[in-house]
Image 1 (tube, rainbow, N blue to C red):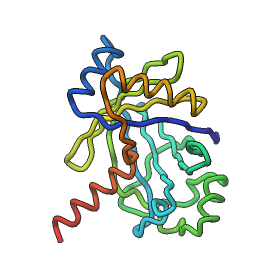
Image 2 (cartoon, rainbow, N blue to C red):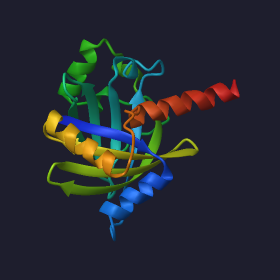
Image 3 (spheres, rainbow, N blue to C red):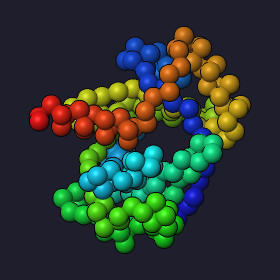
Image 4 (cartoon, rainbow, N blue to C red):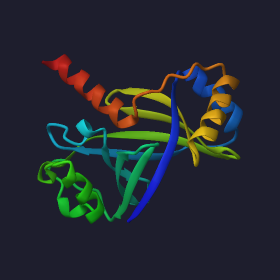
Length: 197
């Protein structure tokens, strides 16, 4: 179990912007793939608290359960390695959750007996460590759609923001903070559901 502070800046990209950044920072580098399995109750109790619970599959049967909780600056992440991926067709056993994650969810009165995997998002990721932070370029596929995203992970907010703004300026991109991946996933899921009703 680890608890980490996450400060990152994000920007959705179009395919052309994605390719320009890739050609500039990630020449001769192949992306690695990871899959996020998003967990919530049927009535979205976790999302309603602006939190996110996921299992990330990093390959080689390597799984990590993460709860992301908004903090005064950035997010607090609660990370727990797990041995396997639970079945998506049954409720997730709350015994899979660490005591720290259970404590956070219980404080928010979230019914941990109703948790289940509600879907998955696959990301092809490129990473490059810069002096000012970790530059991340993502191509994500989920629910018959895809998107491109730039992320910049930093240690300090103010210096990180200036460096991120410099990167956007370099590619003449106007910053518009996007919904995060889990929000985009559930927004798309809601849209598809509305089309069938």
